Amino acid sequence: MQTATLPEISVVIPALNEVENLDTLFASLTRTLDSLERPYEIIVVDDGSTDGTFEKVVEHSKHNPRIRGAKLRRNYGKSSALASGFDLAIGSIVLTLDADNQDDPTEIPRFLEKLEQGYDLVSGWKRNRQDPGTRVHASHLFNGVIRMLTGIRLHDFNCGFKACRAEVVKTVPLYGEWHRFIPVLAADLGFRVTEVEVHHQPRTHGKSRYGLERYFRGFADCLSLMVLSRYAERPGHLFMGIGFSLFLLGLVLVGLMLLFQASSKGWFFFGLFSVMSLQFILIGMIAELLVSRIGLRRHRNAIRETVGFPKDSEPNDLG
Ligand code: UDP
Ligand code: MG
Image (cartoon, rainbow, N blue to C red; front, side, top):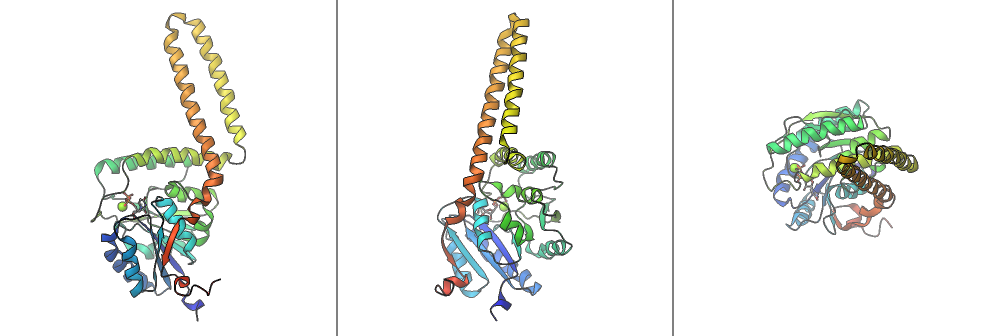
């Protein structure tokens, strides 16, 4: 009897101070999920909220056993919140959604259709993004550059609305702010990735938790991603390759300085700055290679408490 009620669909929702949005979210989400007539669970991961978000989830889980919650010890960031939720999810299909009601749950069936067509991951595309103008432009630029750098033809890498087979989220490494690159990471691992257009709604309560700095971080992460996917097992080719090129560059600069003695100052600074900037980039890459080995497990022990999971009511059954 128990296996019949095991969730087939797990909805994972990261939430940082979203208490005002949860009533609407649960109402609209359960309406759509109930209509699918497939067993499901809704897992809200409270990412260190201070506004009573977790208490709200506890309240809802008392009335609806499909609603579950996990509370992280502090604010770990959206990627870690998602990763904690993925660890807890037991459905063969995993959906992710933001907690702020900007995503519309009635679109879930369209995501599921794509999965049935044989895709492993379906990412939302907020074609008409309902956010302030500067963010919309920054986002277009960001998406264009990421498309170019990764070769993955998606329009919207920053959409929290996604559906995938459980293998994807159980395989893709997630830490830092890498949630933006789930489709890229998945495609790199050979999963079939596609997108569906979704409606986007303005935030009704609270402000975005991110500013424009996210795009700089996003570009830095994209560079790291390219290094990791291509050179994780042969970093020497990358570093030594750059080293040899730098040596050549140095030779050329010295040659130029000898040739144009009078204006050598400009060249000197040009050489100095470009060498320095390369050093920073390289240090960043080395750091990423190290973090990729040790950072993966960091979120694993981030959960302080959970509510609504079978083990919460029967603590001795799962030993
Ligand atoms: N979020 C989170 N931890 C964070 C920042 C954000 O769990 O450190 C959640 C947030 O509560 C929301 C989702 O991630 O459910 C997306 O955040 P937000 O709406 O601020 O981002 P935007 O829509 O501007 O991309
Ligand atoms: Mg939002």
